[in-house]
Image (tube, rainbow, N blue to C red; front, side):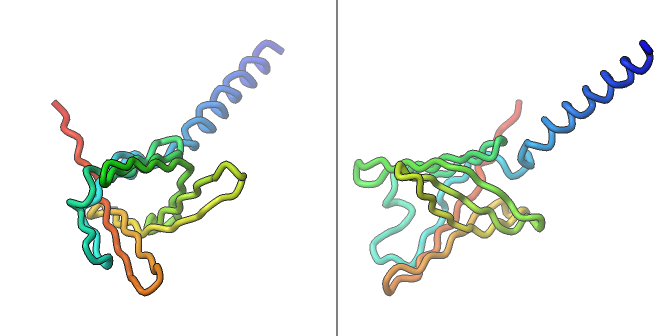
Length: 136
């Protein structure tokens, strides 16, 4: 009887470990991505922004923040990546319980996020590149 209880406890520990580890995002995808290219909007370039970045957290939350002309814009929500690791979907919830979904192309080799938007007569393309972390 004691042996059965021991086996059940060990199995429960394994279930807990695997359930916790399966909730984490791929480590090589997580991190900070800075805007490195923008095209399609006359008069707007990377230098228009004091900063513009997206942080992908390992709990599948994200934060986007930028500053242009002294105005800071922030956005938070959740992200997911498709099985092929070629698209990242961002879901942002507004205060009215509505959500906005955006899909960015992801290049795992170049470590870039690319969004293409069509707004009025403009074809806008923005590229964010992962910030390399320096280890000592």
